[in-house]
Image (tube, rainbow, N blue to C red):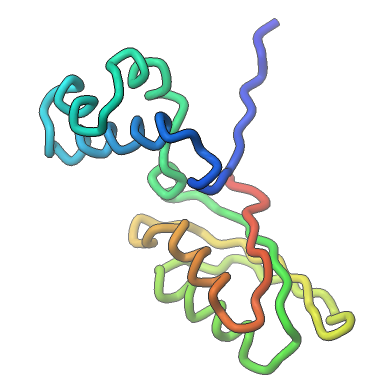
Length: 147
């Protein structure tokens, strides 16, 4: 029996440097800033064997999420305008909101889940999530699912 593939979403600070360099080498090749794999690996400072070992197993999240749906969960303070600020961030990144579910606030904190359709016009999802987390009253934005 074959092993079932498992996928994880991790922040870049938790990813080993070699994997981040593989992603950068792939970006250089795709953007045609370099023409060969050797030029790409030389530019980022890894071996060709490292590139080939990991090239099919690592990608930037936003590069592979176009045309999909992501579901986010987070808590936020029960304050007027907090949800509106989060929705404005999603609109800035051209995400299409499919569902919003908010619990009744307990002790001044509401739990929310949002399903967002990621379109070709949607910007960098990682940056969108960071900007959502930076909004006043927003706590712990996490990706629950990607479909």
